[in-house]
Image 1 (tube, one colour):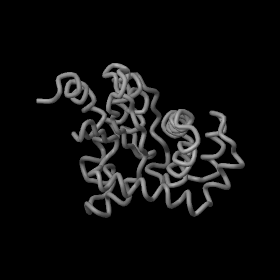
Image 2 (cartoon, helix red, strand yellow; image 1 turned 180 degrees about the vertical axis):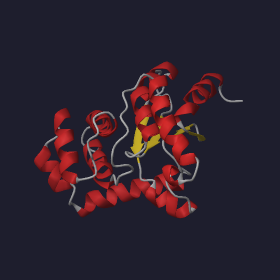
Image 3 (tube, helix red, strand yellow; image 1 turned 120 degrees about the vertical axis):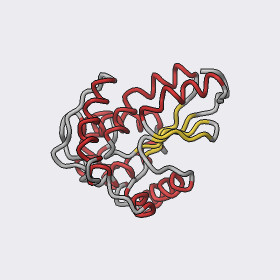
Length: 203
């Protein structure tokens, strides 16, 4: 990556299949465009309240299509995918865990995010409970006892809330959502467009 290259913000929700797929390919994308990628998990629940829309799978017609497309998109990108029995789920614990880890080790935070995503969308494990988040992130070297305590810390809860508020303020309404040089792109299928945008300087 070139020195001082402006980062690409990668917003995602841990309960998002498309966010999961993006998490498996975004590192290679960053290398191709020579930009660092800032991983920024958020929550879609507050967004749905603002927009007045239900989760995608609850929308008539679109819901059935989306279930098919989750698997198809994963196959396209050669990403292992098993649609969870419980879907969607609450991901507040995963969100808080990410930012607590990130403030100590950003690289480990990305590895923790990948582990959580894989547990849910490849292994069918429910990651909604704090205990599950702690157990899964221990696999990438996170101190489980320290994380378990942190998840109950009001300061950690506030840190996560600030990130969600910041994402909404930035106009993020879906997952994944990318922002490069102030230009927003929604959806894993927009990564090729974003790549061309960066390479050409926009159009």
